[in-house]
Image (cartoon, rainbow, N blue to C red; front, side, top):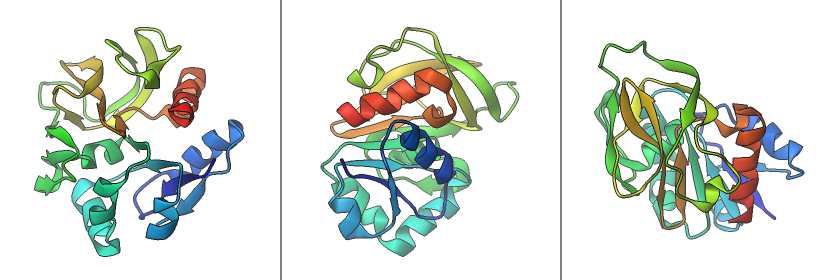
Length: 193
């Protein structure tokens, strides 16, 4: 299986690469459109600030390529948020895959949310073998609002979408690569999709 982690300059991609290595998969880091198109599965990571990440995608032409991908794509953290219509962070227009908006936590909770929290109302093969209220590791100041594509929910002052799915696109707000055995199981499930 050819797994490509999109390397566009925004992301803690080494930890994702190591997580797949533990599953026996050598993931390729690439921003080469031909290599991305030829992949069986694609990880779209993201750590950092949305507007600068979007500029990096635009500068490499990946903003046009990613929405056209036909194979399974998993957006992680900021990667998931950039797949939404827009984010309040830097007032940034997203790639528009998920029909929802990303907003900043402003309900008196400590920002960023950093640490372990549970996911529930799981609705996808991505969560095969994952129990309700499983703990995942999160670090974020912005959240995706619920929509028809919500496949997992988390509470942090409010209830928000911690995972989304539209056709071949999946997104998780949490970091499966840092979420112990349950996170590894989600990555394994993604490889089987």
